[in-house]
Image 1: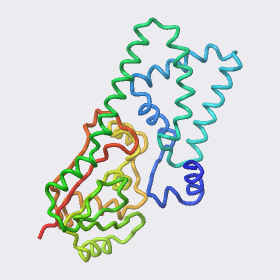
Image 2 (image 1 turned 30 degrees about the vertical axis):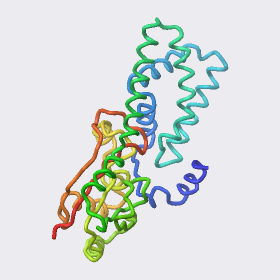
Image 3 (image 1 turned 90 degrees about the vertical axis):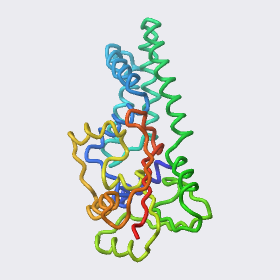
Length: 274
């Protein structure tokens, strides 16, 4: 259902409506696989796939290669954005190649791959338990007095949950093209606090669907081009404290940690300058 829904939107204007941008879609799959396997596992996967080419006369191996290539090309060409979860069927097939490859290697090679994978999984679980949105929720409850007005730009799945003791205004910002109107509307609404999530604003500032560590690599290959320069300027100015708000808190994960999809976004909390 997820695939069909996105495909229907993408056939129309999914990427445009959601301001998601990807100048080189094929690279999305590479970064997704690095994210799914961990860097060590990804290297082993590439070696295993290359080793499998020597057995390409085997009909079963040919079928796996043909299916994998078709799958990767389809998501690279048909979609402007390929989320990590859409890559998972490809992960399963690559695991078959990896299992066949590791079964013929010394036991210490298998031990290293397994231990790194377990460690990677433990770190990811820790990140989910201590997600930045949960940290921001605790900070808001402890530091923002009850009854204050807090503005967000999307639903609560992308943002911290705020208790009923505060007034929360959800102001979707996706397709606005008039900078002056954006600033005037913010001034008119006059919220005391603004909470931003990188799951939303990064789609106007960077390639938020990739691990942050990969951004310099991606920018060198396909520099970011905003689908909405107006909102790019708006969020840049807001975060830079140019629109009458100052940053009072920020929650973000260390760059070198794994980057599972929709986990540990950067949360920025701004307060109105009176």
